[in-house]
Length: 215
Image (cartoon, rainbow, N blue to C red; front, side, top):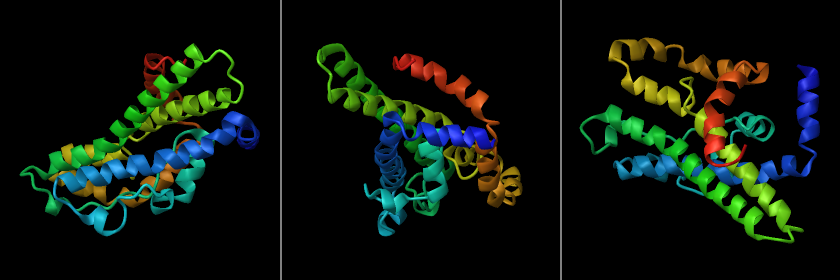
């Protein structure tokens, strides 16, 4: 484990590793903003009222999630507050699903855009020079966002997948699971650091990476 962490830290000292920092700082607010706007479209102004409809990364910053994103390409930000009581739809559970899916969908849109820019640069720019690092940035941004889209759909709190799962469960099961929600962050962190999720996440994200021409 220690050697793995040291090797990961050394990789951060490379150009692609350093470019992950601005990639994460760009990705975090767009992902969280998507959640906030989705809730706002349904009539919930909680995120807006608390200043979370913002492109400022610090408004959504979570230290542990940020470190995991930079080092492992999997992580999280501070969850955007929503209140489904204000949703202007009859089925609140469907509203929660819509809001929860908005973040991963934003990640896939950003991944697709970044992949297109990367391929255009590599295809049409003859003398890359400094532009090579721009291409690497968009490559890292695309891979990061594919990874986050897949990662966030895992049904473990506080990830988006857990909210989607909870919304689909019968109320009696939902309230039973809710008792253990507070432990989700600890379980998630342990799974990431132990590498237990690596195989599953690679299996799920590799088809998307191939679709975008990134592997």
